[in-house]
Amino acid sequence: MQSLARQVEARAQRLAEASVSGLYEDPFWFARYGEERARRFGGEDALFHVRYLVQALDAQDPGVMERYARWLQGLLVPRGMSSRHIAQHFQGLRNALSREGLTEPPQALEYMRAAIAALAWPEGPARAVHEALPRLVWCTMDVLARRVPGTREQEARLHDEVELQWAYLMDALGMKRPGLFVEHARWYAGFWPQRGLPCDYRTLLETLEVALSHEPSLREEVQGVVANGLTALAKEQS
Image (tube, rainbow, N blue to C red):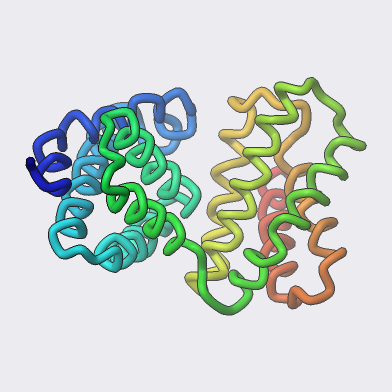
């Protein structure tokens, strides 16, 4: 019987294609990178994910995937992607492995889980936000529900957006480049109408500020990054 590594390797192209099959339903990718580049680099990245997984399986070392995840984070976050997007890529591959029946022994799934976990920032303000994230997301959604009530379907999509904005904030803090969040806010404000949600992007960022105000353990540095994003939007709209 073939080893798990060889089974994954033999199906590399199929796994890569399956892992991104639903990715481009999100208009973010084509808006941010253009359709041709998004499809080309998305496909290439997906194949790289599989190849690194094969290396990890050969070495019997989840650290291969963890180091790869952190390397990708450092490469892609400054280019407009968030750690949440990278995690979605990895989860897509995890799902593809399951559909292909590559679940026993369970190392492939476990190594992908390790890669996703490695994207969490380990220290500093980014870690503080990560630890408070369930409360921050709940508070943000609570404030938004009172300000801009929408349908159940819109609420689910808005929840995803809220988590995404917190991910961008954590990435800017984790990389010690707060300006990344300002750059993100400027671009995302223009993209936001494509989301078709019942609030504007500025309102969403304002609710992040409200949520942070209920977390005194988070330093002013965190609140300042969001405030700078709002200031940048105000200047562009004036």
